Image 1 (cartoon, rainbow, N blue to C red):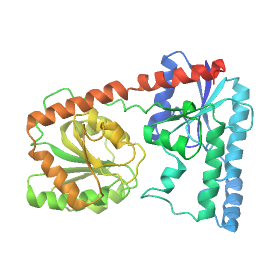
Image 2: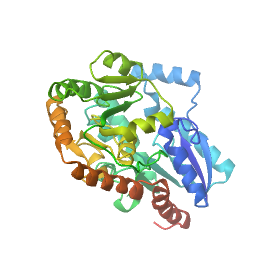
Image 3: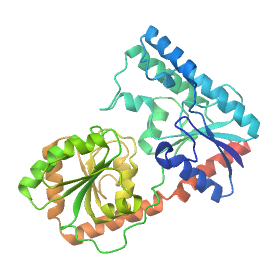
Length: 370
Protein backbone atom coordinates (compact mmCIF):
# COMPACT_ATOMS: atom_id res chain seq x y z
CA UNK A 1 0.00 0.00 0.00
CA UNK A 2 1.22 3.51 -0.84
CA UNK A 3 -0.24 6.48 1.05
CA UNK A 4 0.34 10.22 1.24
CA UNK A 5 0.42 11.47 4.83
CA UNK A 6 -0.38 15.19 5.03
CA UNK A 7 -0.29 17.89 7.65
CA UNK A 8 -1.18 21.61 7.50
CA UNK A 9 0.95 22.02 10.65
CA UNK A 10 4.27 21.18 8.97
CA UNK A 11 6.36 18.29 7.71
CA UNK A 12 4.71 15.06 8.90
CA UNK A 13 8.13 13.46 9.42
CA UNK A 14 9.34 16.31 11.63
CA UNK A 15 9.08 15.57 15.36
CA UNK A 16 7.97 19.16 15.98
CA UNK A 17 4.79 18.75 13.91
CA UNK A 18 1.59 18.15 15.91
CA UNK A 19 3.39 16.80 18.99
CA UNK A 20 5.24 14.24 16.84
CA UNK A 21 2.05 12.25 16.16
CA UNK A 22 2.35 12.20 12.32
CA UNK A 23 6.00 11.08 12.52
CA UNK A 24 5.11 8.34 15.00
CA UNK A 25 2.26 6.95 12.91
CA UNK A 26 4.33 7.17 9.72
CA UNK A 27 7.09 5.16 11.38
CA UNK A 28 4.67 2.55 12.72
CA UNK A 29 2.95 2.14 9.33
CA UNK A 30 6.29 1.82 7.57
CA UNK A 31 7.31 -0.93 9.97
CA UNK A 32 4.16 -2.76 8.86
CA UNK A 33 5.20 -2.53 5.22
CA UNK A 34 3.23 0.55 4.14
CA UNK A 35 4.95 3.02 1.82
CA UNK A 36 4.33 6.42 3.43
CA UNK A 37 5.10 9.68 1.62
CA UNK A 38 4.92 12.81 3.74
CA UNK A 39 3.54 16.12 2.49
CA UNK A 40 3.66 19.50 4.25
CA UNK A 41 0.55 21.45 3.23
CA UNK A 42 1.18 24.37 5.57
CA UNK A 43 2.50 26.94 3.10
CA UNK A 44 -0.32 29.06 1.74
CA UNK A 45 1.90 31.93 0.62
CA UNK A 46 2.00 35.40 2.15
CA UNK A 47 0.04 37.26 -0.58
CA UNK A 48 -2.77 34.69 -0.37
CA UNK A 49 -2.88 34.88 3.42
CA UNK A 50 -2.94 38.67 3.38
CA UNK A 51 -5.77 38.76 0.85
CA UNK A 52 -7.78 36.19 2.79
CA UNK A 53 -7.29 38.07 6.08
CA UNK A 54 -8.74 41.20 4.47
CA UNK A 55 -11.61 39.19 3.01
CA UNK A 56 -12.36 37.59 6.36
CA UNK A 57 -12.58 40.99 8.03
CA UNK A 58 -14.99 42.16 5.35
CA UNK A 59 -17.24 39.15 6.03
CA UNK A 60 -17.05 39.57 9.79
CA UNK A 61 -14.90 36.45 10.16
CA UNK A 62 -11.73 36.28 12.29
CA UNK A 63 -8.82 37.60 10.22
CA UNK A 64 -6.29 35.35 11.97
CA UNK A 65 -8.08 32.03 11.30
CA UNK A 66 -8.15 31.90 7.50
CA UNK A 67 -7.18 28.20 7.49
CA UNK A 68 -10.62 27.33 8.82
CA UNK A 69 -12.47 28.83 5.86
CA UNK A 70 -13.14 27.63 2.34
CA UNK A 71 -10.53 29.45 0.22
CA UNK A 72 -7.60 28.16 2.30
CA UNK A 73 -9.09 24.69 2.49
CA UNK A 74 -9.52 24.58 -1.28
CA UNK A 75 -5.98 25.83 -1.87
CA UNK A 76 -4.50 23.18 0.40
CA UNK A 77 -6.79 20.48 -1.05
CA UNK A 78 -5.56 21.30 -4.55
CA UNK A 79 -1.92 21.04 -3.44
CA UNK A 80 -2.57 17.71 -1.70
CA UNK A 81 -4.46 16.35 -4.70
CA UNK A 82 -1.68 17.34 -7.09
CA UNK A 83 0.95 15.71 -4.85
CA UNK A 84 -1.13 12.55 -4.51
CA UNK A 85 -1.35 12.22 -8.27
CA UNK A 86 2.33 13.03 -8.74
CA UNK A 87 3.36 10.37 -6.22
CA UNK A 88 0.87 7.83 -7.50
CA UNK A 89 -0.50 6.99 -4.05
CA UNK A 90 -3.62 4.95 -3.47
CA UNK A 91 -4.89 6.74 -0.36
CA UNK A 92 -4.38 10.14 1.24
CA UNK A 93 -4.23 10.13 5.04
CA UNK A 94 -4.86 13.63 6.40
CA UNK A 95 -4.07 14.65 9.97
CA UNK A 96 -6.65 17.44 9.80
CA UNK A 97 -9.83 18.36 7.97
CA UNK A 98 -8.10 21.48 6.63
CA UNK A 99 -6.27 19.93 3.68
CA UNK A 100 -8.44 16.95 2.68
CA UNK A 101 -8.64 16.59 -1.13
CA UNK A 102 -12.41 16.94 -1.38
CA UNK A 103 -14.14 16.67 -4.78
CA UNK A 104 -11.05 15.25 -6.55
CA UNK A 105 -11.95 11.57 -6.86
CA UNK A 106 -9.04 10.71 -4.55
CA UNK A 107 -9.74 8.33 -1.65
CA UNK A 108 -8.89 10.12 1.57
CA UNK A 109 -9.07 9.31 5.26
CA UNK A 110 -8.78 11.72 8.18
CA UNK A 111 -7.13 11.17 11.57
CA UNK A 112 -8.19 13.80 14.11
CA UNK A 113 -8.17 14.46 17.84
CA UNK A 114 -11.14 16.85 17.95
CA UNK A 115 -14.01 18.37 16.01
CA UNK A 116 -14.98 21.97 15.53
CA UNK A 117 -18.30 21.26 17.22
CA UNK A 118 -16.64 19.94 20.37
CA UNK A 119 -14.11 22.78 20.46
CA UNK A 120 -16.73 25.46 19.92
CA UNK A 121 -18.86 23.96 22.71
CA UNK A 122 -15.97 23.71 25.18
CA UNK A 123 -14.52 25.91 27.91
CA UNK A 124 -11.80 27.06 25.48
CA UNK A 125 -14.07 27.96 22.56
CA UNK A 126 -12.55 30.76 20.45
CA UNK A 127 -15.93 32.49 20.61
CA UNK A 128 -16.31 33.36 16.94
CA UNK A 129 -19.44 35.07 15.67
CA UNK A 130 -22.34 32.68 14.95
CA UNK A 131 -22.04 33.07 11.18
CA UNK A 132 -18.33 32.24 11.21
CA UNK A 133 -18.82 29.28 13.51
CA UNK A 134 -21.66 27.94 11.37
CA UNK A 135 -19.56 28.23 8.21
CA UNK A 136 -16.67 26.30 9.78
CA UNK A 137 -19.10 23.63 10.94
CA UNK A 138 -20.57 23.33 7.44
CA UNK A 139 -17.12 22.89 5.91
CA UNK A 140 -16.18 20.31 8.53
CA UNK A 141 -19.35 18.34 7.82
CA UNK A 142 -18.73 18.34 4.07
CA UNK A 143 -15.13 17.20 4.50
CA UNK A 144 -15.89 14.49 7.06
CA UNK A 145 -18.80 13.10 5.05
CA UNK A 146 -16.55 12.82 2.01
CA UNK A 147 -13.88 10.79 3.79
CA UNK A 148 -13.66 7.05 3.14
CA UNK A 149 -12.78 6.59 6.81
CA UNK A 150 -12.42 8.94 9.76
CA UNK A 151 -9.99 7.86 12.47
CA UNK A 152 -10.68 9.50 15.82
CA UNK A 153 -8.23 9.61 18.69
CA UNK A 154 -11.00 8.83 21.15
CA UNK A 155 -14.51 7.46 21.46
CA UNK A 156 -16.06 10.77 22.49
CA UNK A 157 -14.75 12.39 19.29
CA UNK A 158 -15.94 9.42 17.25
CA UNK A 159 -19.41 9.77 18.75
CA UNK A 160 -19.54 13.47 17.86
CA UNK A 161 -18.52 12.79 14.26
CA UNK A 162 -21.37 10.31 13.98
CA UNK A 163 -24.07 12.20 15.90
CA UNK A 164 -23.33 15.82 14.99
CA UNK A 165 -21.72 15.51 11.56
CA UNK A 166 -23.84 12.62 10.32
CA UNK A 167 -21.02 10.37 9.15
CA UNK A 168 -22.03 6.71 8.96
CA UNK A 169 -20.96 4.91 12.13
CA UNK A 170 -19.20 2.12 10.25
CA UNK A 171 -16.88 4.68 8.62
CA UNK A 172 -15.71 6.25 11.90
CA UNK A 173 -13.22 4.33 14.03
CA UNK A 174 -11.64 5.27 17.34
CA UNK A 175 -8.07 4.12 16.71
CA UNK A 176 -6.44 6.12 19.49
CA UNK A 177 -3.04 7.77 19.52
CA UNK A 178 0.20 6.32 20.80
CA UNK A 179 2.25 7.48 23.76
CA UNK A 180 5.72 8.93 23.27
CA UNK A 181 8.88 6.88 23.26
CA UNK A 182 9.84 7.67 26.84
CA UNK A 183 10.70 4.49 28.78
CA UNK A 184 8.15 3.10 31.23
CA UNK A 185 9.06 3.29 34.91
CA UNK A 186 10.10 -0.13 36.17
CA UNK A 187 11.31 0.50 39.72
CA UNK A 188 9.60 0.85 43.07
CA UNK A 189 7.91 4.16 43.74
CA UNK A 190 7.31 5.81 47.12
CA UNK A 191 4.19 7.85 46.52
CA UNK A 192 4.30 9.59 49.88
CA UNK A 193 7.65 11.21 49.03
CA UNK A 194 7.18 11.86 45.32
CA UNK A 195 6.61 15.32 43.87
CA UNK A 196 3.71 16.73 41.87
CA UNK A 197 4.32 17.49 38.20
CA UNK A 198 2.81 19.91 35.68
CA UNK A 199 4.05 20.14 32.07
CA UNK A 200 2.82 22.61 29.44
CA UNK A 201 4.83 23.95 26.54
CA UNK A 202 2.12 26.52 25.73
CA UNK A 203 -1.42 27.64 26.63
CA UNK A 204 -0.60 27.69 30.34
CA UNK A 205 -4.05 28.70 31.54
CA UNK A 206 -6.12 26.39 29.35
CA UNK A 207 -3.77 23.52 30.21
CA UNK A 208 -4.83 24.06 33.82
CA UNK A 209 -1.82 26.00 35.07
CA UNK A 210 -3.66 28.73 36.97
CA UNK A 211 -5.90 26.13 38.58
CA UNK A 212 -2.91 24.05 39.66
CA UNK A 213 -1.13 26.99 41.27
CA UNK A 214 -4.28 28.06 43.12
CA UNK A 215 -4.76 24.51 44.40
CA UNK A 216 -1.09 24.15 45.30
CA UNK A 217 -1.28 27.02 47.78
CA UNK A 218 -3.98 25.09 49.61
CA UNK A 219 -2.03 21.84 49.36
CA UNK A 220 1.07 23.44 50.89
CA UNK A 221 -0.97 24.80 53.76
CA UNK A 222 -2.22 21.31 54.62
CA UNK A 223 0.98 19.46 53.64
CA UNK A 224 4.00 21.79 53.73
CA UNK A 225 6.48 19.18 52.50
CA UNK A 226 4.77 18.88 49.11
CA UNK A 227 6.82 19.93 46.09
CA UNK A 228 5.55 20.89 42.64
CA UNK A 229 7.81 20.69 39.59
CA UNK A 230 6.45 22.94 36.85
CA UNK A 231 7.86 22.79 33.32
CA UNK A 232 6.71 25.29 30.74
CA UNK A 233 7.27 28.35 28.61
CA UNK A 234 8.08 31.90 29.69
CA UNK A 235 4.47 32.60 30.70
CA UNK A 236 4.38 29.54 32.95
CA UNK A 237 7.72 30.35 34.51
CA UNK A 238 6.79 33.97 35.19
CA UNK A 239 3.45 33.02 36.71
CA UNK A 240 4.96 30.50 39.14
CA UNK A 241 8.20 32.32 39.93
CA UNK A 242 8.84 32.73 43.65
CA UNK A 243 6.05 30.46 44.88
CA UNK A 244 6.98 28.38 47.91
CA UNK A 245 7.48 24.73 47.07
CA UNK A 246 7.43 25.24 43.30
CA UNK A 247 10.47 24.30 41.24
CA UNK A 248 10.19 25.99 37.86
CA UNK A 249 11.95 24.91 34.66
CA UNK A 250 11.88 25.89 31.03
CA UNK A 251 12.14 23.24 28.37
CA UNK A 252 14.49 20.45 29.42
CA UNK A 253 16.21 17.57 27.67
CA UNK A 254 14.14 14.43 27.18
CA UNK A 255 16.10 12.32 29.66
CA UNK A 256 15.70 15.02 32.31
CA UNK A 257 11.96 15.19 31.63
CA UNK A 258 11.74 11.40 31.89
CA UNK A 259 13.35 11.66 35.30
CA UNK A 260 10.75 14.19 36.47
CA UNK A 261 7.95 11.89 35.30
CA UNK A 262 9.52 8.83 36.94
CA UNK A 263 10.00 10.66 40.24
CA UNK A 264 6.48 12.09 40.35
CA UNK A 265 3.73 10.73 42.56
CA UNK A 266 1.12 12.58 40.53
CA UNK A 267 0.75 14.49 37.31
CA UNK A 268 -1.62 17.31 38.29
CA UNK A 269 -2.79 18.68 34.95
CA UNK A 270 -6.48 19.69 34.85
CA UNK A 271 -6.62 20.76 31.21
CA UNK A 272 -9.90 22.55 30.66
CA UNK A 273 -10.82 21.02 27.32
CA UNK A 274 -7.79 19.45 25.67
CA UNK A 275 -9.18 16.79 23.35
CA UNK A 276 -6.51 14.20 24.09
CA UNK A 277 -3.37 14.96 26.10
CA UNK A 278 -0.21 12.99 25.37
CA UNK A 279 1.09 14.12 28.74
CA UNK A 280 -1.43 11.86 30.49
CA UNK A 281 -0.16 8.79 28.66
CA UNK A 282 3.41 9.73 29.56
CA UNK A 283 2.41 9.99 33.22
CA UNK A 284 0.63 6.64 33.17
CA UNK A 285 3.71 5.02 31.61
CA UNK A 286 5.78 6.55 34.40
CA UNK A 287 3.34 5.25 37.04
CA UNK A 288 2.43 8.74 38.20
CA UNK A 289 -1.21 9.09 39.21
CA UNK A 290 -3.12 11.31 36.76
CA UNK A 291 -5.13 13.96 38.61
CA UNK A 292 -7.30 15.98 36.26
CA UNK A 293 -10.83 16.81 35.11
CA UNK A 294 -13.55 14.44 33.98
CA UNK A 295 -13.57 15.87 30.43
CA UNK A 296 -12.83 14.92 26.83
CA UNK A 297 -10.77 11.72 26.45
CA UNK A 298 -9.67 11.41 30.06
CA UNK A 299 -12.49 9.10 31.16
CA UNK A 300 -11.58 6.80 28.28
CA UNK A 301 -7.84 6.91 29.03
CA UNK A 302 -8.34 6.18 32.72
CA UNK A 303 -11.16 3.65 32.41
CA UNK A 304 -13.69 6.21 33.68
CA UNK A 305 -11.39 7.33 36.49
CA UNK A 306 -10.60 3.87 37.81
CA UNK A 307 -6.97 4.33 36.79
CA UNK A 308 -6.65 7.97 37.80
CA UNK A 309 -8.32 10.69 39.87
CA UNK A 310 -10.80 12.87 38.00
CA UNK A 311 -12.67 15.79 39.53
CA UNK A 312 -16.00 17.06 38.26
CA UNK A 313 -15.33 20.82 38.11
CA UNK A 314 -12.29 23.09 37.56
CA UNK A 315 -12.25 24.16 41.17
CA UNK A 316 -9.02 24.66 43.18
CA UNK A 317 -10.61 23.34 46.37
CA UNK A 318 -11.68 20.11 44.66
CA UNK A 319 -8.27 19.75 43.04
CA UNK A 320 -6.43 20.30 46.32
CA UNK A 321 -8.69 17.79 48.09
CA UNK A 322 -8.06 15.22 45.35
CA UNK A 323 -4.29 15.59 45.63
CA UNK A 324 -4.28 15.41 49.43
CA UNK A 325 -6.60 12.40 49.42
CA UNK A 326 -4.31 10.65 46.96
CA UNK A 327 -1.25 11.29 49.12
CA UNK A 328 -3.20 9.75 52.02
CA UNK A 329 -4.05 6.53 50.21
CA UNK A 330 -2.13 3.38 51.14
CA UNK A 331 1.04 2.78 49.15
CA UNK A 332 -0.25 -0.64 48.11
CA UNK A 333 -3.43 0.86 46.60
CA UNK A 334 -1.48 3.37 44.54
CA UNK A 335 0.96 0.72 43.46
CA UNK A 336 -1.87 -1.43 42.07
CA UNK A 337 -3.58 1.56 40.42
CA UNK A 338 -0.46 2.84 38.67
CA UNK A 339 0.68 -0.59 37.50
CA UNK A 340 -2.74 -1.15 35.93
CA UNK A 341 -2.63 2.32 34.33
CA UNK A 342 0.81 1.65 32.91
CA UNK A 343 -0.30 -1.72 31.52
CA UNK A 344 -3.28 -0.05 29.81
CA UNK A 345 -1.05 2.47 28.04
CA UNK A 346 1.52 -0.11 26.96
CA UNK A 347 -1.18 -2.36 25.54
CA UNK A 348 -3.76 0.05 24.16
CA UNK A 349 -1.78 3.18 23.27
CA UNK A 350 1.29 1.59 21.74
CA UNK A 351 2.03 3.06 18.29
CA UNK A 352 2.09 -0.36 16.66
CA UNK A 353 -1.35 -1.11 18.07
CA UNK A 354 -2.70 2.22 16.77
CA UNK A 355 -1.17 1.57 13.36
CA UNK A 356 -2.70 -1.92 13.32
CA UNK A 357 -6.20 -0.59 13.97
CA UNK A 358 -5.72 2.07 11.29
CA UNK A 359 -4.23 -0.31 8.74
CA UNK A 360 -7.13 -2.76 9.01
CA UNK A 361 -9.45 0.04 7.85
CA UNK A 362 -7.02 1.34 5.20
CA UNK A 363 -6.86 -2.13 3.71
CA UNK A 364 -10.63 -2.10 3.25
CA UNK A 365 -10.44 1.33 1.58
CA UNK A 366 -7.77 0.07 -0.80
CA UNK A 367 -9.87 -2.98 -1.62
CA UNK A 368 -12.90 -0.78 -2.27
CA UNK A 369 -14.86 -2.33 0.60
CA UNK A 370 -17.41 0.05 2.11
